Amino acid sequence: MPLSPLMEELSRVTVPDYLTNLAARPMDEIRLMRAECQQLESGTSYVRRMAQGRLDIAGGELTRRRNGGAKGDLTELIGRLPELLTDQGPTSTGTPRPPSEMEPAKGLTVELEEELETILSASAISSVVDLEEAELAALVERLEGFEHRVSNHRRSLFTTIDTLQAEITRRYKTGEANVDSLLS
Image (cartoon, rainbow, N blue to C red):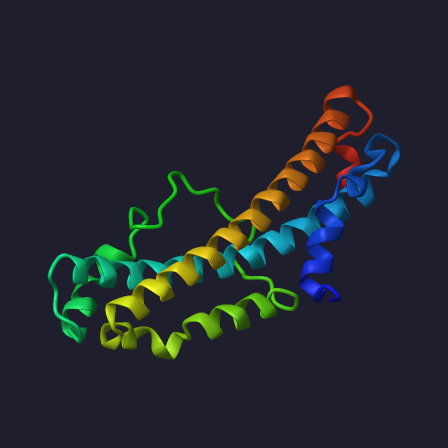
C-alpha cells in the first residue's frame, strides 16, 4: 500500500539520509530544511493538542464513570472542562516544548485532522457522556493510540530540527557563517 502524502513527507525528512553530509551543504539549504521540518512539526503539534484535548475529555469521563458517576451527565462534564483541559490534565507529559510557530501548518496535516475526526469529531465530543463504559474505554484507547503515533512523529521531527540547528550553530561558532550574512 502506498504511503500517504504526509507519511511520505515525514519519512523523507526523518530518515538519516536527509541529514547526510550537512557540513558540505550551503547554509541556505540547511535553513530551508529546518523551516520545512518546523512547518511539519507545527502541524503535527497542532493535531496532537487537539487529540490530547479530546483524550482528556473522554478519559476524564471514563474516570468519573469508574468512580461511580452516572452515564449521561453532560452538565458535570462541562463543569469539569477547566480541570480536564489544563496543562496538568490526564495526558500531560511534563514540560511541553513550545511550538516554533503559533499558526498550525495546513496542507499535509489535514489527513491527521481527518483521521482524528473519524475517531471523535469535534461535534461529537459532548456525546461521550452517552456512551456505554466499554465504548468509552475503546474510544479512549483509540485516542491514546492516535496521540502516541502523532507524538512519535513529532519527536522524530524534533530530532531532525535539533540536528539542523546544531549545524547552523556550529557554523556560527567556528566562523564558517557570520551574522552579517543574514543582513545581506
